[in-house]
Amino acid sequence: MGMGKQGTSAAVTNLMAKALEATSRPGEVLAKVAAMVTPKSGVDLGGIKRKLTPAQATKAARCVTAIMMRLDVRPSDACRAAGVATSPNNFHGFHLSEPELRLGADAVFRDDRFNQSLNHYHRLVVETARLATEEGASVDRPALLDELAEAVDDFLLPFVPVVERTAYEEISEHLNLIGAYFSKPRMGPGGTIVDLPRLWGACDRASLAYDSDLDAMAFAGEGPGENWTGNLPRLLLLPRVVGQVSVTCTVPEEEGEASGSPSSLFDVRTRPIGTMEADLLYGISLALIGAPGGRVAARFLLEPWTALVRGPRSRVPIPLNDVLIWLDPAEIMVRGFPFIDLPASDHVGPFRIGAEGVAQARCPEFARWIASTADDGDPDRIGSTRTLPVTPETCELFLGPVTRTQIWDFERPFKAEMVLKDWVQLHGGVPNCETVERIAERLYRDDEHSLDKMLLAMAEVIAVAMERHVEAAADGVSRKRFTFLRRMRS
View: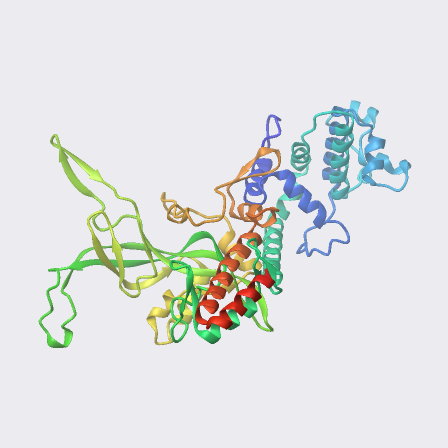
């Protein structure tokens, strides 16, 4: 993504690094900042100045002039196409004249010589690229915008956090639109009308939940239970490490031997096989849930998992020709948090894990959750599945850059279910692995693999299972009527 120029300044290198975190290219940061600093943008810049300094304006004008000359586009044509001034007499405020160019890079200009609006220079580059393309030139517009970004890097640097914040605001707003979309009946890809509020109401009245293993509706039981998410269309996005806790791993001392006490006839003696640190993760899904007023809302669904990077029996010495070979089996993933004993298994066999002490939070939201569950008298509640609203804050928390704390890639065990690509290709063929870009690729595409279309397909599966259940439970006449009505709704 470099500009091909030698002697890149430390500030530019810093900008590139920060831009990679935000939008992958300096030119993309430039485009967003240019939109922000327009007088009518309405963006609160937090006191950051909207105008270039005279020195920065000089560098911007010099840069766009060089681009115009290189692409053989006349400055007056570019200025006219970009609409940077109402009169050609004012075009001179956006580019250097030929005599000024001959003065070289050390030329000094009056403070009011060049226009100080970044958005004008951005439009000049865009229109110059367009005009050159129309004349048959091969133009890499993203690289040209990167070049202008380099020229005004010191102006852009303070905006990078604002750009990042704006990206999370936009992605949260657009994810929430999916909830609003499903508040009305929608035609599924298989031809079934999906009316989620109506479907959920019927499931509640009959105490039914969709069982994905059976591909059928099943009795949900009394209370919320662990299957309350069965009727929620959801897409697994990614896992996030949110905490850590020390765990003790145990196995039965003698298979099937009772403790000897009549009051604990079914208790089995156990022995510890190791104590270690376990990572606490949430599998983060985008889910659709019911909202007040018969509406549908998008939410982040958080499902707890426990990860042992190395199990208690991971390293086993095997003698081979008098050489000890150490085996390191795959990492162990267990659904749930170990505040109740959890069953696990490794290459030797099953064992159980249980938490020792208090969990240490690595995430501010998880720290708040631990604090909220401390005094409610139910220590197991900390490991419950829950939902959070989709907000700029939760998007930044769950979709922001990951700081790896160890080598193991926690996404590996979730790969089969995750709907996100490992990386996406941005303008100019630049690869990007950031979660926000991977989410955007799924959100904005226009085929059956977009987030809304995939959620619709999942919702249709639940709706069809409910219709099959109703038809199967009805008598002969009613069954025929239900079958007819389902056919008429398709």
